[in-house]
Length: 216
Image (cartoon, rainbow, N blue to C red; front, top):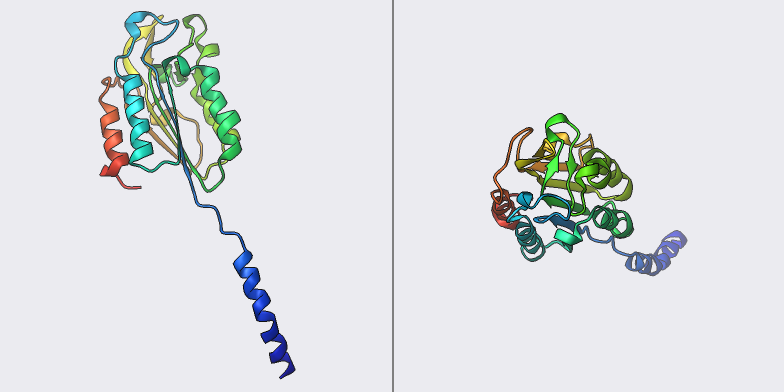
């Protein structure tokens, strides 16, 4: 009987302890959307007509229809090498947790995808030093794993277009071009390896997918 009374007397305290236990924070969705139509140092004939607009439409769809919690949009002059890297390294690294999903969407030019060393060309990429002034896909893959402790990572690129830069075809990464980043990383590209895409064709399908046309 005394044991029963002792156990009963502990119940209110146990209930209070359970009530005071903080709830687990909900998983959130973050996106960094980059679209580059004009390049500071590239020939004007390499200007893309829809990249910046496509990026804006994708960002709007993620924010308003796909219910993303935090969407960062960088277009043209905002989309420098330093600016893109700083968002991941200095900003998202401070707020993303293992429960969260981070999406990186890039539409613009790329090079090197046809010989397995792809780079994303950013607004301030210099043809005289493409490797030093552009974003290496291999390095970015490693850096994201270091900087971003997300439970899920999605990398989507539309970076294979007609034209060439100093003899290099403008073929950025296909999905298979990224380094091995584990099963929690989803990779999608508008074009296959060594395949030239059609400018403006990919974004409408991606938007359709994230606004109800595709599954989670």
